[in-house]
Image (cartoon, rainbow, N blue to C red):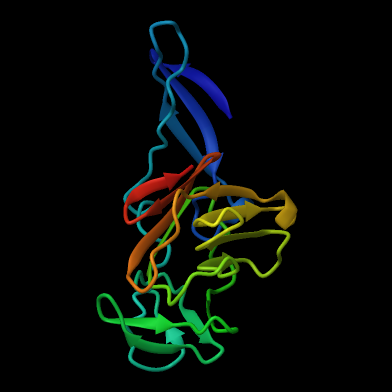
Length: 207
């Protein structure tokens, strides 16, 4: 990273991992303008992203009528797979996937997180009942490098956690309430730089 002045404009030069499927191995060089406060301090830099970079990496409607393949609606080819006998049933808008809590899950393809420095994960869900050990989503099959969302974490409320060094070293975002039971709710989690934010039905409930 560097800060330079060019034709009376201050710029910051840096890199990210936004190249498709690049992850940490293909870094994109980026340049954004700097703005200053009256006291000379630098204002937060808003990263400039192209329209292509703002599109979802993957989107699953779960609206297939049969089979175990869940088609990635973006056309990027990140099709998912139903495991453990997961079934389909009417959902909030079309079909949905029912998971029985006993080994059924939707498996995502390897590599989907390779370039996820910043990310947003969002889903509609309906819980049959509360429970502290339920995982709404779980990325990674190694508990030492994992991120997951539970409807009732250690504090009894919705919780997001992310770790690169085992569950005991997880960074967590605790919500302010339990998720509703037997009704549809929209849950989202975002990571921007070092800040994670948790949303339920469009309202920020923890950061």
